[in-house]
Amino acid sequence: MFLLGSVGAVHTAPTMSDTVQPGPGNVTRIGGSVYGQVISGDNNLQYQVRVEEGGIVNLGPRVDPRALPLPVVLRPRDFPSLVGRERELNMALAAIAAGAPVEVQGAAKTGKTVLLRYLANRELPPWVPDGVVYLEVDGVPLADVLQSLFEAFHETDGAYKPTELRIRRAFQRTRALLLLDDATFDERAITRLLNALPRCVLVLTCLRRRFSADGAAIALGGLPAAAAMAVVERVLGRPLTGAEPLAAAELWHAVDGAPGWLALAAAQVAQGASTFATVRSTGTAPLRVTGVELRGAAAADYQARPGDGCASIDPGGRCGIEVTFTPRVVGPRTARSGLTLIQLTAAMLVGVPCFFSDGFSS
Figure 1 (cartoon, one colour):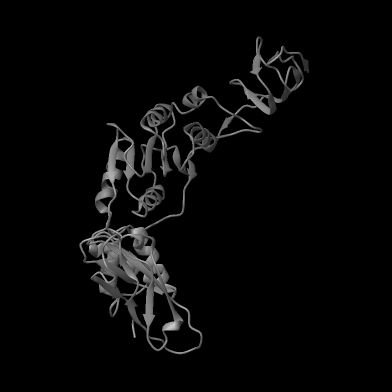
Figure 2 (cartoon, helix red, strand yellow; figure 1 turned 90 degrees about the horizontal axis):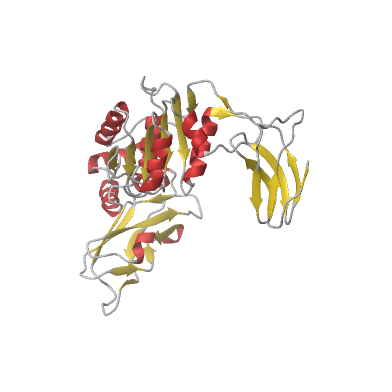
């Protein structure tokens, strides 16, 4: 189809063909310079366009979406056993049962994704019979999230870009559980999202509260001490022994009970790669840990690295030390830890009082 346009715009009027039958008056107006595919209108007419001051437009076949059989199931990996989150889990389940949206908020490594994985893999309640869909949406614009949800419940034989109105029409009767992880939408975008999915139950996670009044807001903080130790022992696959309970308790303080950090540290210990070590400032001004020295007959077989939180430790604060075992020969190894190069900021002297605990077993 050869179409002429004026400078800066192309006016296209598709003609009838064997494969494309657009309705009368179907007109696409493109301003400026465009190169590549353009998908136009609610019927999704496809154009390969090279437009400068007029051009040639090749019209593709009409694409019609088809609804997939229900229920649609797009689950993440399961996390079958939550520890220390009974209250938050009950709040989420109660909100889902009421058909209300749920917002799970908390800092990094507090277990937001774990809670979503648990919810996504439970048996579907009768009030969301059409399925469950889990999406990671960190930094994804709302329009792309809506299209991904549309594609989760529909299939096409070609590229298809539904309008937001078409998406809203498609979801008017859909009753599904939709879990969106790491959402960064603002309040206005969430309102649009809820309006587009009126009968679905939405559960999302975020760093800070996004809802205004609608739905249930669940704040995830650190785990209680007993639950935190249970997480560490579960990852280790054994009870804590020797100096490990004290060191694990110090680590719990250092990370404010965040289960993700606790599990990561325990995994390193379980692999034999590292052990628990924590520094606590007992001074009156911030301190900086610039290095850790290990002493002992086999100290060269160990490496210690201050964690990110050691760059500046507030009075009473803590930071973690990663201690790695790198043996050069076969045989038992022991080492005695000692902090050096502990420096205060500004007018303070080297050697500020601090407490160092390690989890070495001799």
